[in-house]
Length: 257
Image 1 (cartoon, helix red, strand yellow):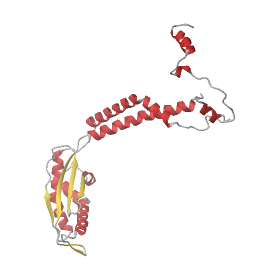
Image 2 (image 1 turned 90 degrees about the vertical axis):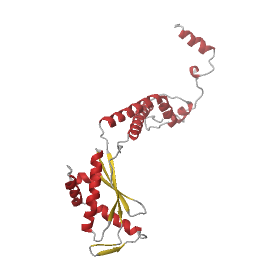
Image 3 (image 1 turned 30 degrees about the vertical axis):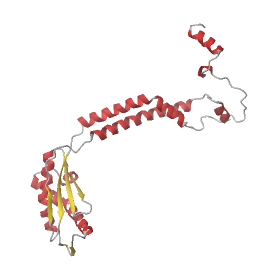
Image 4 (image 1 turned 180 degrees about the vertical axis):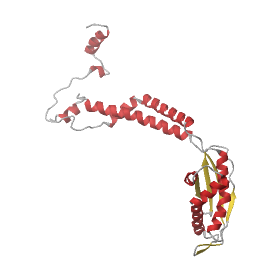
């Protein structure tokens, strides 16, 4: 004979029905998760603001050490390589320290570096420098200080360089983060997954501990050597309830023993 506890088989249809039966609970927990995420974002997460300065590389002939380059409008790949060089110079410790000194910032060079992000404009020799802080004025101040310091710093390192400022930064009117909509969605999904996981675990545990035989098919699988001669239907589950069902259970409902 086979032992039903030898392995665990999960009926996906039954699992889906169990989840569907608890759909309202899952949705309720998901809404609680979304509310908690919104409250955490509003109270604990500080807003951030971004200011961006734009630069353009316009060099006809430059030299870096012993290497010389001739840049034309049709040689964008070389210009892009030069942009990457300028971004590297911006992210260097010495350049960051010059920015900190000029703007009188209370940050280390490593902390300031984490506030600065760069983006190259595809197909051009231009790039953006974006500063993210917790105050609009500070983001604008740092971005424009970079616009003042970076060209001078590049001139000291790259001979014949010509970096032009396309746009100075302005004080941002709107916050860049956090995203309430994204955090609400994450909270909602987290709550739904948590609730569904609990329902699924309880279903699996109940199925594992269930020692009852629910169908003739299950009986045949468990005991293939035993023939099923007959089965007694449960009239309580039948839509056609006959005389014996109605007389017996009807009397029970009336209080008869």
